[in-house]
Image 1 (cartoon, rainbow, N blue to C red):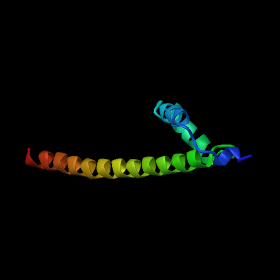
Image 2: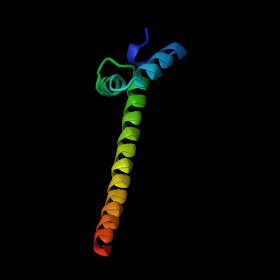
Image 3: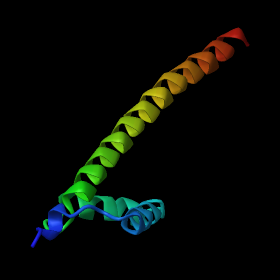
Length: 84
C-alpha cells in the first residue's frame, strides 16, 4: 500500500486545494497548515511552500514600491512648501 503523503493528487483534489487557497485569510491560514503540517500530501506541501514564497516576494516588492513612491511624494511635498 502506498503512503498517503506521496499519493498523486487527483484533479478534484487540486480543484478543492486551489479553491480553498483563493479564499481570503482562510486560504493564507490553510497554506501554512499545508506547508508545515505533518499529515499533508508531499505534493501539496511543496506547492504551499512555493506559493508562500511567492507571496513573500510580492510583499517585499509592494513594500519597496511603497517606500520609493512615499519618499518621492514626501520630497515633492517638501518642494511645494519651499515654493510658497
